[in-house]
Amino acid sequence: MADRRFQAFLAVAKHRSFTKAADALCMTQPAVTFQIRQLEEHFNTRLFDRVSGGIVLTPAGRIALDYVERIMQLSSDLDARVKEHNGEEAGPLAIGASTTIAEFLLPRIIGEFTSQHPGIVPQLIVANSESVQARVAERELDLGFIEGDSHLRTLETDVCCDDELQIVCAPDHPLAKRGPASPEMLAEYPYISREPGSGTREVIDRYLQAAGLGLDSLQLVMEASSPEALKGLVATGLGFAIISRATAEKEVRLGDLVQIALEPPLIRHLSVVYPRERILARVVVEFVRFAKERLASGASAATDAAGSGRARAAGSARRVPGRADRDLVARIE
Image 1 (cartoon, helix red, strand yellow):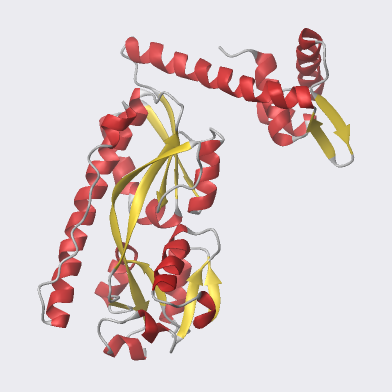
Image 2 (cartoon, helix red, strand yellow; image 1 turned 135 degrees about the vertical axis):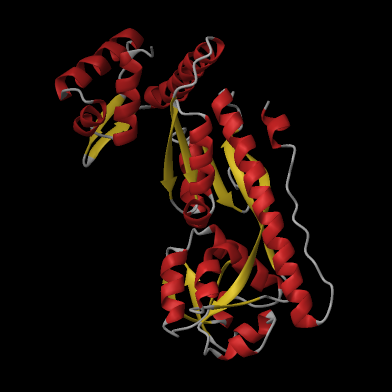
């Protein structure tokens, strides 16, 4: 229902190219140019300037962009609300998630949700936490699941559950025989890290800094952009890594890797983010509620198992409780 001129304007502003905007909209370039010309005639001002290397917004174009984005979002919200009022439950649901969450936690949750809501067509976009936040802020995604908290003021962050990070290494690695490891012990061995921008890496860096260790204190031998790559490298004996307990359960069960708890434990939040000023569609609220319940119950069971394991290893009854935030839906609604 949105004005075609606004769609063309947003596409050109995003791609900085009339040709790329035309491809994205499945239109011809002259048609896109015509829509932009109509908009400029309406406002009696230029919205784009041609510069070497592409197209840039004029000062008037930057003002228009802010309003057009809000108009388009309101149009989308209106469409969704009317469909909800009429009892329709159909359409896309764009979900972003950091690599760990997308690969090991969300697939089953999305599958169960879709079976209960067959008219919804979820789309899962996998990226690191920094990229997921940026795309939610740009309204390219309805919501995103990240590791830790958002640093963007335009986003609301709600904690879903807790997740414990542990050391993983090959069975014959020296750390495998040492039991719970302190941060200081890690400096003695080669370390494989996640890439910059990863939420996992950010949490680990803060944990080490709190213990008086910088990343330069560790024997960093390689960086990898996914848990699967980390596990493969660790299995070769190249070094140890620190990853979520949930990501290595299968390899530990098969005897390919060993998990070692950190002492003190390294616990992080898994959070959901969404635009702060946006009225969320009912399907988004329903999916958030559904996902939070599943994530919280799964994290609680994993934390209980981890606490029991540490108690057996250390001869104590220490347990780190999960902290499922039950208030997310109330805050959204």
